[in-house]
Length: 404
Image 1: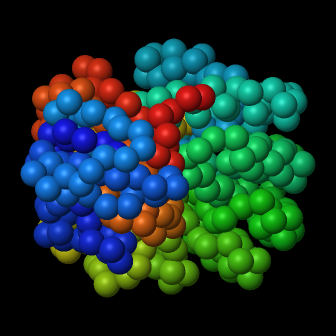
Image 2: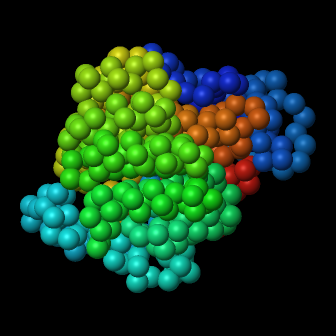
């Protein structure tokens, strides 16, 4: 039992998997509340005026807020080493595209990963996983994509599986073999190689993703890779419209993609293409912040009746942070979302964007009890406004205090 909760926030009826349009501005709130956890799941909750007899272990929230843990539907946190040298290049004025053209960027991470043993890659990555769990993330999607050859892509996916088996958070794996063209391949030859990797990748991954953007993979390449992934049972996701608008959103919709991510350059045509679909638009404000590129037109998507998810894009080159509370704050400060809209984008909608909204992302009986208990005095507005002040009293994963 959690008792004396100042505000229980994120209450959503059973069966609601995402929020769209005007629903983005709504979330259930119960003041002065209790919540019961049984077998790692949310059992029930209510007002302290009607609190049942307390049995078992008790956590006194002492007036703190309780919210569902953050869900991060887009990360690349399995990588080797660091790219701080490129950070200096950015300070000197080089663009993301210029760094990539010089052999840096994704290919740099690929070279580092190739030289790193699987055990060492797991240990490095687990350090980042512990970091994000400690700041409130309870569900996380992790992509491959720094292998760029069959052996190293599968190495990454095996590491993600080990992470999934090691932590109490909900973890999902995405095969992003088509993150860039691997060294020694032509683009056409590498697309062939990605398609050939698909059956083995499908034994370890949940989703398939493609970096469909200018200078990376064309819409034709993307169509072929997604068809191969779907044939192997992998649900599509897409990187699109980060650098240029080349039709990635439309490809995603045609293939019933779970999410379409980045969208920094998306406009009215892409909004119209997404209207009425099951695909979740997902924006990555940490990448915009770090690279100095435009932020996605989040308000336009919501005003058009669409849902919106926000994720960290945690990776060594364009968003070296997995702090979802900061992602929520950027949604408010730079994208002009209200705190409630940003909260829905980093909880329920991001859970939807990684295919786990039936498990986590809201305060709903039957869902996994992945929860954040704050210090007294916090609310959603203060969470975004005072975005660097410590706010977490306890992180609960599957109903137990975080202990990794």
